[in-house]
View 1 (cartoon, rainbow over the protein chains, first blue to last red):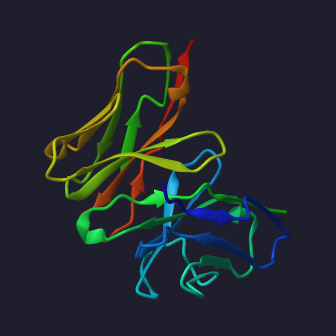
View 2 (cartoon, each protein chain N blue to C red):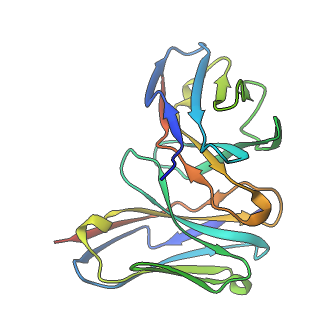
Length: 115
Length: 112
């Protein structure tokens, strides 16, 4: 069964450094998402992306965050200057067509640790 | 603002028991509701999606129901097995946008 793949599985970064998290969504999917889960807390929506632009974002997704689809397969989340509170598990998800009520499929996540 | 609550927070049952996990949401205007399974340190595996016009969905030993007007969903697991041990998450897609709003999950332990 097709799946969403994320790399790396674990990223350790010094505070203030830039980090890029990578995702390969399922190949025929059109909608892409980033979520995060701080340890012990709920999974939270960050951003959704469709047709090469952000379609929705949460209050968490401030100017430090950006997303990009640099080619036909990858979808990236960049955090420009990391803070301690950015430490979390970051999940990428994709779905086929929103208007067809298709499920979102999630990757295994990237655990981001900020030191 | 949509809020999702899951009860109980944790559940421990002996193998073979049937069990029910509960999910409630504050705004009944939803497109769909999705149940996920999360194993420790892993991603989310989609189990079932119920559209707002549906009452229930079944997959194997799993049955999910939806009562949109009362803002409730249940996940019924029949004949539980130790391999069912995981965290079960409920998420709703509100009637606006395409994000998912998650509950905190129910941690299930099935004892052999």
